[in-house]
Amino acid sequence: MSTRVSVIGSGNAGLTAAYHFTLHGAEVCLYGATGFDQPLTDIKQRGGIEALATFNDVDLTFAGMQPINKISRDLEETLAYSDLLVLPVPSFAQEPLFIEMLPHLKDGQIIMLMPGNYGSLVLNRIKHEQGYGDLDITFVDAISIPWATRIVGPAQLAILGMKEFLPVSAFPAKHTQQAIEALQPVMPLPLTALNNVIEAGLENINFGGHPLLTTLNMGLLENFDGQFNYYKDCCSVSTAKAAAAMENERQTIGKALGLSLRPELEAMNALYAMDCQSVYDVNRTSETHGKLNSAPNSSSNRYITEDAAYLLVPCYEMAQLAGIETPMITSCLHIDNAYNDTNYFSTGRTLKKMGLSNLTPQEIMEFVA
Image 1 (cartoon, rainbow, N blue to C red):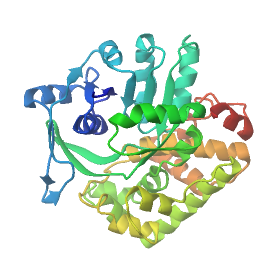
Image 2: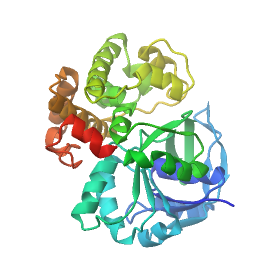
Image 3: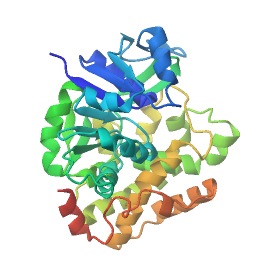
C-alpha cells in the first residue's frame, strides 16, 4: 500500500519532491499558492512532471515522466490529504505559509522543512502566539533539500544529482526517530538523525560556500550575468582559505553549544560519495555541482538573501551568546547588508524570532531536546 504525502510548494524543490516521491511509490498531493501556481497548470497540460535525461548535452539522473496523483490550489484540501506535510520552500516563505496552514492542521501531523534553517523553532513560536499551543504536531528540520535540481521548462526538471542521505532532526528532538520512521517510506534516500534542530541548522552545507563565495565574487557575477560554473569558477585557492576560516568559526560555535559538528569536507565527501582532499577540490571536481553553468547574477540571489539571513545570522547570534568572535561571519554579513541596503542582523533569523531570546546556551539545548 502506497503512502500519501502532501508537498507544499511548487518551485524547483517542490516539483522535484513531487516527481521523486511519486517515482519512489508514494501518492502525492502537490500544492501551489495563488500567484506561484503556473507549474500546476503546466503539469496538468503535460499530464505529469518530466525529468530530462539530458540538458545542454549533460547527462542527468532519474529521468522519466511521472503523473502526480493530485495537484491543488486549496491549502485546506492539501493538508487533509496526508499527515505527512513536506515544505520544500525558501526560509522566508515558511512563516506566512505556516500562519495560513494553522487553522487547518490537526493533531498527529508531521511538518518537514527542507531546508529547515531553524524554521521549526520559528513555527513553534508562531503556533503558541497564534493560540494553537495545544496543537500536537511534530516539526522536522532537514539540513537542505536532497537534490541539485532546476526547473528548465514547463513541468520539466533537470535533476543533476541527489545526496547519499539526508540528516534531519525533529523538534522536540525526542520525536526524531518516530518522525524518521513515518517519513522514510516516501523519501528516495535514507534519513539520518541529528541531535537536535540547532545542529541541523549548523550542519547545512550551504553555510560556508554560498554566502561567502557569492559575496567575494559579486563583481564578476554581476558584470558577466552569472555566466559561470559557480562552484568551479568562484572557488579559488584564496577564497577556499577564507571559507576555511569561516568553517573554523562554525566549529567553534558548535563546540560552545556542546555539539560535535561534522567538518565541511567530511560532510561533502559523505553526502556526495566523493573522496576529495580539500573543500577546494570538492568545488573543482564535484560532478553533481559542476554539470551546468548556473551561478547567481546579483546580490538578491538566495545564496545571500536566504543563506546569509537564515544561516549566518543565527550563527552570529549564537556566537554572541557564547562570547565568541566571528570576524568572517560578521564581515560577510556587513558586506551583504551594504549590497542589499538592509540589515540582516535584525531582519534575519534571530534568536528572538526562534523563541530563544534570554536563554543561555545550556537552556537552548534543553529547550530543543
